[in-house]
Figure 1 (tube, rainbow, N blue to C red):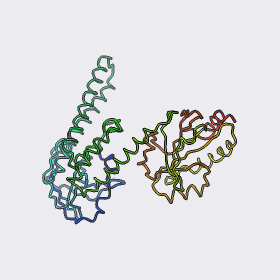
Figure 2: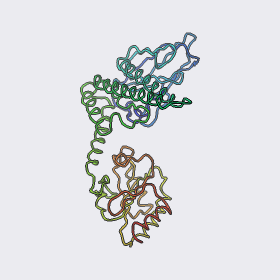
Figure 3: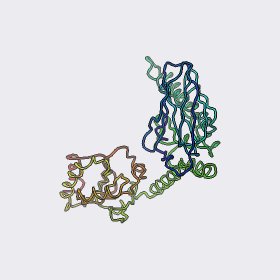
Figure 4: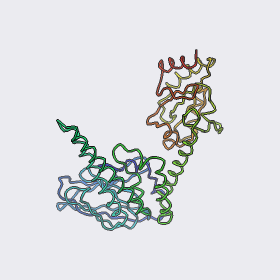
Length: 381
């Protein structure tokens, strides 16, 4: 069960720090499965990558030796039989990881306190998630009665909240460990947040404050602090809701001037999310320029407030200038970390929202003729 995705987006380039590095040895035995290869995966900021592999000997033993590992723990996955074992490894560690039968359920770790603490959380969390999957699968049973359906729903709910309570308990009780950071980023199926969104920052801040004492040099601490800043910014933006009931934005244009979305009050507004880096909106921008010219003198004013979800200012400015985009172009240059994405629940790019002159969001993801038809109606043209 692959649980590294969310945490992988959080990780920073730990190996780039200027700390003194040393060697790590990982060894052990895997028995009870047919797989004969074991892999070592390192999690980088962008994507996990396999850094080594080893063939099991006849008795199931294996060994890895790493060099240039920093003294503060970094995350690796040991992969065997398509199952991942997360490890937090620091320079100088001599770690033994072994398992008999089901890998995740039964593996043991010796020689790495952080990895063993991580095991205590991970095994319980995965077992609980698998239990939820099993309960959900039973909803497909033939001739399921309504009473049985209610029983399964109650069982699922009870197990779900048990897992959540255990996850939060682990985080609080082990807040000074990097295993708690890993636990912060694990999600049950269908969950976007740890607890309920904005209040999650309490747990992130609790762990960050403890890590400042236990692991002040950890690159994970710095990224955790950046995450807290982003969450605080999102809550600040959420508190600035206009009377028209849409979340307000205040972002900088290419000249460094801050422009509020609410400053366009009284006009029909197309709030458009795009990315110059992805390069997938050029044709849409060309079509939108035609519409922008059409409604320049409409009875009800029309404006585009286009938010670039990018991190490169030169690339964004170049795209705006080369495409000669005539409307308001803004960005906070935080890419996928932009608080604006969370405010408007943007899951894909491009995405747009059409806001009428009263400030009501009346449509989402309208393009081409459908957008033109709606604009005719709203602008009175």
